[in-house]
Length: 420
Image (cartoon, rainbow, N blue to C red; front, side):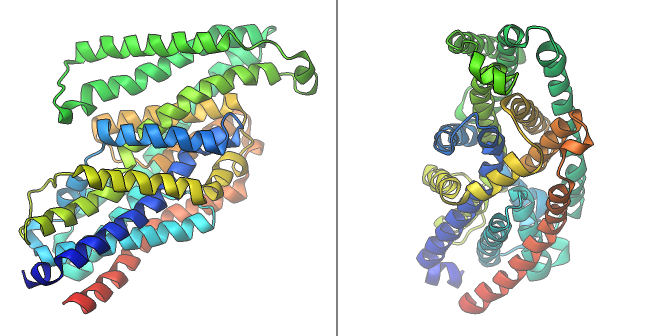
């Protein structure tokens, strides 16, 4: 235990720095692609997107946060085979490696998975730094499977949603009137879908246990409230005759722009519930070991409030300072997005991520969103997609796990050389 005794404070400060760096990467890459459809379709400005992300990412992380700490410590790695010293250095190297890969990917505008970055990094340090037996290889299979499952699932939902928009609203004689008639129903679906998962699953850790029936009725009430708020906002939108001369559906898209405020909030919440813990999970593991004086804490490390705050601040700064690169890729380069198309992609993504969270399926919100944008593009025909950009994105997905692992191995040996 001499490492913790001798360098405890230094290691804690370094772990906080690396955790902040990783959170910055999540903000620059992952939150950016969560907000990319809203900004790319011009439904929200970048400032509005950052404000929404600040509030709803934090709420999602706290109220419905995925327990990634537990997954990292017991789902991927056998904690009983790792000493406290190696656990601290390993988790620090994983944070630094994942943050570095996210920085590289973001500079190139690649939307990659923060989940896969940190999972690859943890596998790398555990397999090489400890032993191959320290990795639960059975847990890696579902992660690889999610590369296919999540984009296909969300792409299918987005395709269906956009086709419903075309049939109910766009391909009708009175698209503007039909938009005002049907958009409130989509608003209800948005409010209901996010709240049902939060109420039935997410609030248990703050002491609120609701039955499925209670959760259903409360979620229905939230959906109705969201719908009524939406109707009030939509009542202010009038037909813009001049704009409709240039683009026949300009007034219709204004209606969908209001809807996208709600889907952006639900997307940020869903993303927060699923991915924000990627940055703070490993940091919580390090903090737990150091604060206990070098003892291995249980399979699930408690998450101190200041660690969550550090992660939340890092994420917001990452989005504000460097998020525009990935926003451009998602919002403008895969396919041309308008508010009606962006809404379908965002609602499909939020539905898939929230649903997967509820049943414990490991999905990447990045892969899910890209799949949804592809689904919307396909609904307009294969020619609507920029296949060159799609190819680059798929390649970046394939190399994320091994890149995270390789970087973690390098950083692990550097840290071990310095401290041991």
